[in-house]
Length: 94
Image (cartoon, rainbow, N blue to C red; front, side):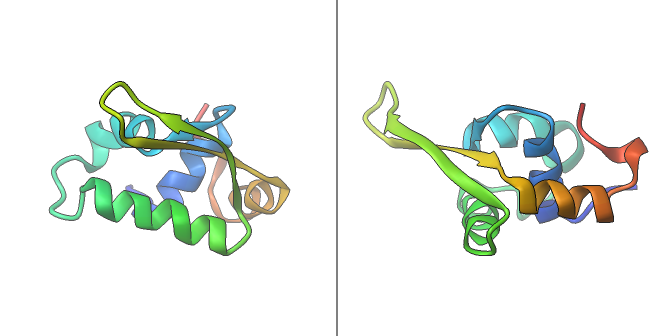
């Protein structure tokens, strides 16, 4: 069973200290990479929506090797609570 993509992003952040969108997409590529909506723009939208809803925080930002802005996000207590409540333990990112 696949989680909805936005929930999968939150679930991934549950198991890591922090990550940028490229790292999130790389981790989710085996399961979600074949979807038409698997784009950086769409996944940035997922992360920003999670931030706007108070489930993740921007933890750091810098420029990558090509001069593009890279923003790292981390899950917060509200996001952890949502994963604990809505994602069965067998689907949690470890």
